[in-house]
Length: 261
Image (spheres, rainbow, N blue to C red):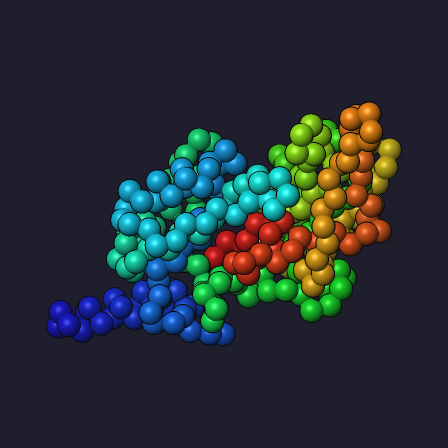
């Protein structure tokens, strides 16, 4: 009777992992040892991230995902342990764990054949920016709109995973460009239809709200200094130029947070 119960428990655990992505199976040699951690504080360094999860057990891999141009954290990362038992302990300990003003979300990552990670919703889109997906990019934003204001605006149309306003790395002034990751393509569609051409309160120019084109890669241009060393704080990325973050080594666009799994 005990053996049968143990077998049933194992099946439930297996189903909880594989149900996230029924299109492939996780290799047996690393099944259940990788975690994706969302909602990390922006101030958390990779060394801090490592030390936090090393409280559970020795770590095989630790990767904090950061902006390739500014080095700033995108508030999520990956942890890999040597054993599945340690991974389970980490989920039990840190899922919902509060650090600074954030509440961590810790869940299994989904490895693909080359040991990178992805989810079905984060695969590169095969067509242009008109392809519907859950990633949205916004241009022509007023300088005073921050992540919290974006979240309030877009949350009217569905659940949000994360928002990101791109800023000059030195002045921290908004470039007028932002990303919003909705929890589903359906929510993103609602937001695009409702907010493309919307004029924020106090602004005179409508914002552009489009689907992010994950098939192309484009450099995020930084504000350049003139010969006199002055910076232009009014620099904007034009909505006519496709701006899409490159696909990173973990299967996610480096400029976007992952979908929660």
